[in-house]
Image 1 (cartoon, rainbow, N blue to C red):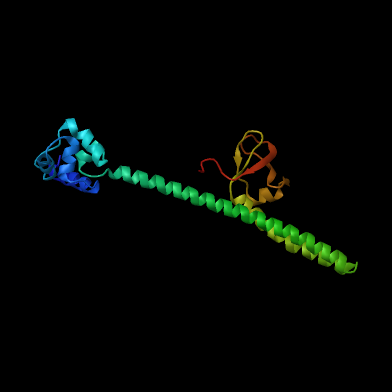
Image 2 (image 1 turned 135 degrees about the vertical axis):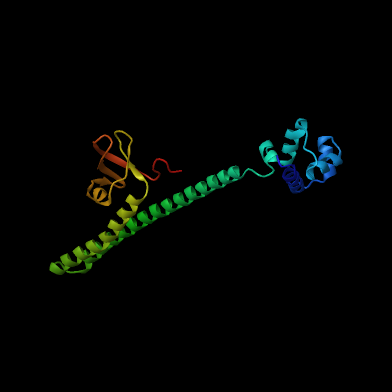
Length: 206
């Protein structure tokens, strides 16, 4: 063990805890001279007070004996926080995409119905009326295809039969019968076609 390193670490932790040598000594019922010897590397804390010392300085016994904060422990905490932040960001993006999909669908349907009504009442019956209605239908159905792409890009579809989570291709979702966001898909797990309900979180996502 490097007593000089350990002593410097004790001094650093003591100062972070806003304690003087005297105050630390009083908490441990020892003399400030003993604390001074630790910090200069001339002596080591007695094993009988080591745990209490670590509690006061908010460090582990392993960190005390190493003379430094546990780097692996810090990295693990940072990685866990990073994963949590990434999960939150993914959830936020998923919700944004999902809302965008519904906005596009609603606006397209309203526009389609409104356009057809205008064409039906304001344009005289005949070929031109039919052409305009068809053009309006195509114009407002295009965003629906984009909305479907957004729908497929997030989450999964849960098989009603076995509970398996299906992530279909755009073509598979497009060709499947549907009721809203529930689609009639073939499950690769049980090989049966069922009405699969859309879920926003796939297995393994937090």
